[in-house]
Image 1 (cartoon, rainbow, N blue to C red):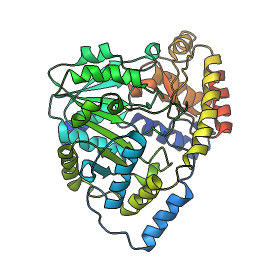
Image 2 (image 1 turned 90 degrees about the horizontal axis):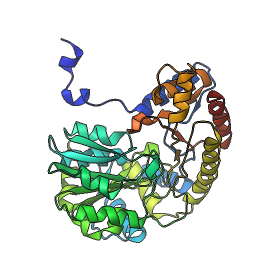
Image 3 (image 1 turned 60 degrees about the vertical axis):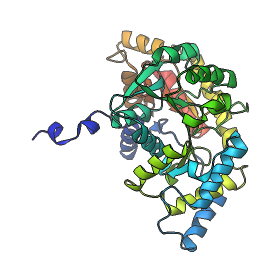
Amino acid sequence: MSHSQVLSHRVQAIKESPTLAITAKAAKYKAEGRPIIGLAAGEPDFDTPQHIKDAAKAAIDAGYTKYTPVSGIPSLKRAVVAKFKNENGFDYTVNEVIVGVGGKQTIFNLCLAVLNKGDEVIIPAPYWVSYADIAMVAEAVPVIIDCGIEQGFKLLPAQLEAAITPKTKLVMFNSPSNPTGAVYNLEELKALGEVLLKHPNILVATDDMYEHVNLTGEKFYNILNAAPALKSRCIVLNGVSKAYSMTGWRIGYAAGPAYIIKAMEILQSQSTSNATSISQYAAEAALSGPQECIKPMVAAFKERHQYVVDRFNAMPGLRCLMAGGAFYAFPDAREAIATLHKAGKIGAATDMALAEYLLEKFDVAVVPGSAFGAEGYFRISFATSMDNLKNALDRIAKALE
């Protein structure tokens, strides 16, 4: 039997996360002794704050190492409810929130809980790599809307309206955005909310994972702040990974209508069961404890962000916008790609060829924009030291000469 006969259609419809694949290749080269600088991984380069680690150690010593309720320990769920109330102005009860194994699992469970075969999911591009593939695992159809640099990487109301069909079941928002760092302001969200209010059968998911990686200091809004009437069909997704540098702890959380949250819990009860007990106690300390730990991290990201954007805009054939949040730069490299292709430096006029050229010849790992549904761009993470960024950008500048 061939492999394709053995493997499910479901798994054959999706691809490995390109960011993880590139990170793995770069790590392999590094292990072989090459001076690779990896700018592909999306995680803060800061340690988890000490009071959070202490809470985890205390949980181990107190014997909190057993099963917990599937949807999360009550004290963490109360901390999530308080977070939404205090920071976002949302009123949820504990049966309207769930804790999952990372933000990715809550999105995965949401999609499996609400999507049927053939349902359409509207995803503005550039998009976080997993949205489209998770929709396909649920046998839904991703409807990708191009939102390029010309419109600040943001979905326009007219585009949303034009993409809606009788099959549209879910719209995915992500602000601040991975990969672009674009952040919607209240007016933009109100305009999108007005479109959605005309279509009462469409669910709305908002992924706010980078909420606290705020590079402008302007107040953060999500679509529910702009259109509170969407509450009965909106799912708010968040987690501790980026704000508290806890990527490996694997804790995400979501809030929404109780019946949808319950369906996500049922799925989780048949897959992972509870998120790790120790990580839950750590996450509770993150949400309930002092929030000052976020500030030095964001200050460092701001400084690096300015440096990276200025450098990219000084390089031939690149154009880069200032981001509003997250820790990525997403330069438009279409001109640089065309130039390198013409000069015979890269075989194909694609962002994949550019990324391979940077890795193979200049020892810099970046993620091609096509991984995020945006051909001709690339993403770097500035969640790394200023030294690494300076060296890497020197190499990229040399590559583009």
